[in-house]
Length: 117
Image 1 (cartoon, rainbow, N blue to C red):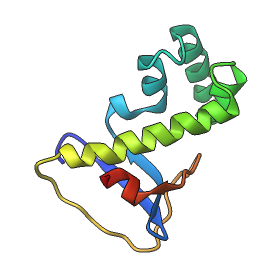
Image 2: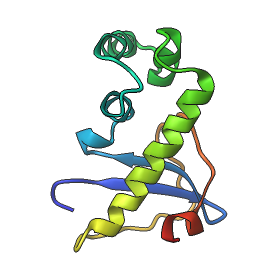
Image 3: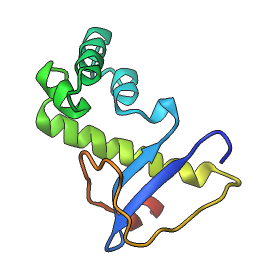
Image 4: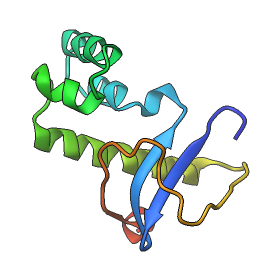
């Protein structure tokens, strides 16, 4: 849509990655809003990421989340992004076969049927 671009990446019919241009869909924003991290942890992770560290690694390194917690948060993020598409009443879509995400980061394995049921 005009105000947002959402990308879903699928392999064998399963969602493995999602990206969004909306600020509310950023992993750090989701963690902060849900109370899983506090502002100081957010700021520390963002400083580390600005210095070149991958954001997930930065979140774990500063003690904001455990590796398992990071994976669970990423799964919630991907689910949130994918489900938000069902709220759209218009927009355009493009399908690219065999295209990998530009920066995969943490992949998930989400059954597409879980999104519609």
